Image (cartoon, rainbow, N blue to C red; front, top):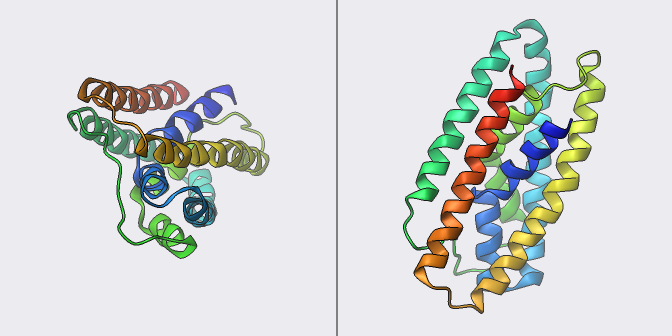
Length: 196
């Protein structure tokens, strides 16, 4: 369960469309509008999780080898994202928006967000810790996921609001990108260890 918790933390804290757009909305429009947007992201992510759980749980019981295939696909996507972030240069890759987005925009983003599907698939198909009860394991995973998801997205939103006020040097921006990429690589390593 501890490995799963660490994986959730690193998967969610690292950049993807959800957290980057939350930071971008915070930087462009402030905390109140950003909170509405993050609420849409949350409901959208929960819906993606339910969609993944409803199909993956049954399939994994029948085809356990599929768990390995999904873990490999998820890891490959995360490696791609890590490389993209690490080589982004000295510009922090926040997504900016000219028009204030709201709840519906956050909900819509998660419906088409490949990272949301990959992360939920990786988390719910991997990191087994209750092999005798897939149902109980899934419920515990949902609780852990949401207990970490909410504060992390609020922190990213707040970071966007705060970074808007700062004028960071290029080396500091580059160091932030490298840290985010290394966090993603940590998740890939944790996923590989959990499959052992």
